[in-house]
Image (cartoon, rainbow, N blue to C red; front, side, top):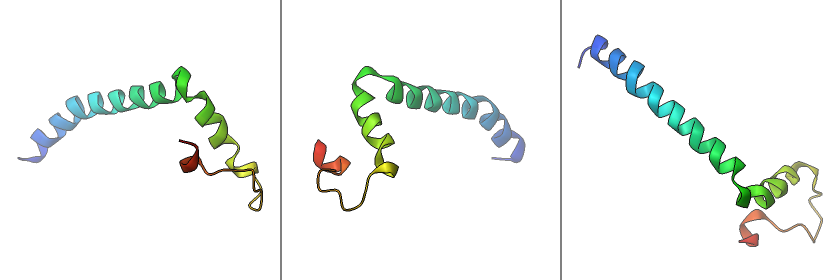
Length: 61
């Protein structure tokens, strides 16, 4: 496979892959069931380390 063939492949299928990956990422964030998880993730920087009521994301599932 030479450079021209690889470049043509990346120009056509690479763009399609990146657009598809972007659409999937946006869909995962914007779906209705993700709101609680996104709200919890948004509060991580504001949470105190010694707060006993703050459960890690892994334990909430």
